[in-house]
Length: 136
Length: 187
Image (cartoon, rainbow over all chains, first blue to last red):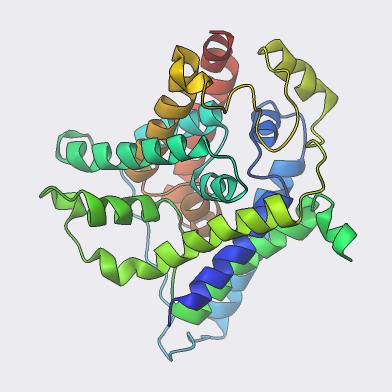
């Protein structure tokens, strides 16, 4: 099955997020209060490695395993990054988790997190429904 | 070795591993790291209801569903198999602040006195779990991504709209943490 490799990368990703406590409500509180470097170190070093990797891929025109050119689609700017971004940030701080950590916390056995995930699905659906009426 | 893995992983180990998942996904499948899209694919699969934004071939995005299923399993590996049973070592200042919010349980990754089935049937629980979750889903889709797609993938690929999104993620987060959440957590 061709998708199994993505499952394996996900397992690595989820294990790391959990063991480094980036999924922890406590760490998110600490981050938004600027009381530890931990979360900033994680995000900062992830970006540094990501940036360097993408530079190398572009510089040496590294191809994907299936032979395709690697494509990185441009993100289009819209008012959504401002309005939606603020709403997302508020939700992140209120629940103490963003989408990746939500899946990992459920896997770690925190059952009530399922409510947050279902609510996030509802929020996504609500956005989809209201999209034509929202400023972009 | 197993004992070492059970210790909390420092940022300089975890951050680079998270970063390296970007080229791994690009090379193995020409895929861009992103997690909140999985919420959209689920909506498209389960409740499209003729909504334009949910009418697309979600089946071609199955890789993303496998990726988040992996994150779920990773949560089990990290949170159960490699669990050392110790509380998260946050700073003293944070402990004091959190106690001030009325939280007494410092065990595990999230406070049990908030995230339990009983709290869910109170205004506080509904706001934190249901409203918070709804804002996470609504806001990330409106912004076109979450922490993974914008903060990590977007900034790594030098996309300025992602930087704008991340700045506003923080504005929203600071606003909630310092001004609104204290009231909600005191309910």
